[in-house]
Length: 350
Image (cartoon, rainbow, N blue to C red; front, top):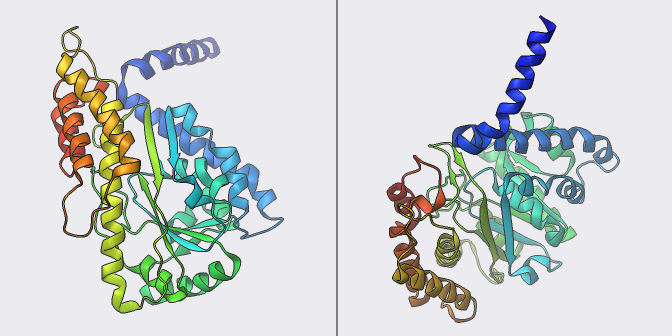
């Protein structure tokens, strides 16, 4: 009996590489299992250290040091732009788009730049132990979204503290994570907080995950993500009457940046050959043009305002990316991904 169990275990162990390389569903769950497993293990290890200075946001620097290498294990690479804005020692409200729990890995990779930073999270995460307990000891802010008045009181207390201690507060204004290739409407809470304490808004934009992540089809491949920090938006002199205008202004800037960096990420994604035939020269030229346009955008783009269309630079990058996509087979994704669905998901708002 023992030998049978050993043989079965050896067989399963030998099957792991085969399943990982050939079955995208297995690879999807295996990568997320590694991600959550390593973070949970690190939480257990770090809890005793966090107890030496409980609820101190500097504990998150320790957490990021231990956890940021998970990205390498699951094949994700993060590129930070606008580092100088993020590194500035100031109190601010960071607003970022929210696509997946993978966002946390991106944050781990830039936490050493932010230094003193904490996050607003839903209360339910606190009960996901050991991660929830470690996160609370590291200074995360948990709010009960059902009890609105209690949540406001908590955020008001936090707001006064972050200004006094020059802490950055990370908020996902969309509320719920959605990997749909677009930015969804913002909630007003972060903007209320910024205006109340007259501290700046710092927009942070993650490029689209649609080229490597599809939760419905259970696909998680290697990917490259651009994290762009935009210049801070001042709230000095603004009142609550200005919240809607401020929110739409920030959202318009983030949408424009999302379009540019997502188009760049899309055209960089290695397309497959069709039937063993290389891409047509026109598609290759379009890819080159997209890269040039996206790179030049940092110096030449004009920030869109609410109700305006994308800039010519963004339009050019998107057109080139679409040309590459039309000549590729699901951007190098495994069989079953669906090139048409992938293009529609990413390009419908670009």
